[in-house]
Length: 87
Image (cartoon, rainbow, N blue to C red):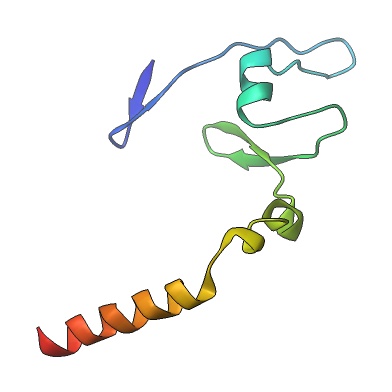
C-alpha cells in the first residue's frame, strides 16, 4: 500500500506480453466496470504511465436523472441561498 497526498492506494503488478499487452487484474476490472473492449486512456507522466478508464460521457448518466426530484433540488437551493443571505 502506498500513501500519496493523504490517500491510500493499493498497488498491483502486471507484465507486458510479447505483443505489448497487459492484463488488468480482475479486482480492478470489476471495481471500475471494465469489460472486453472497454477503452482506456494512457497518460505519459514524468514518473510513468497513468492508466484511466475512459468516461462513457452521458451514457453513464442514463437513468440518473429519472431518479432526481427537481422540485426538491430547487427548494434546497433556495433554502441554502436564504441561509447565505442572512449569515
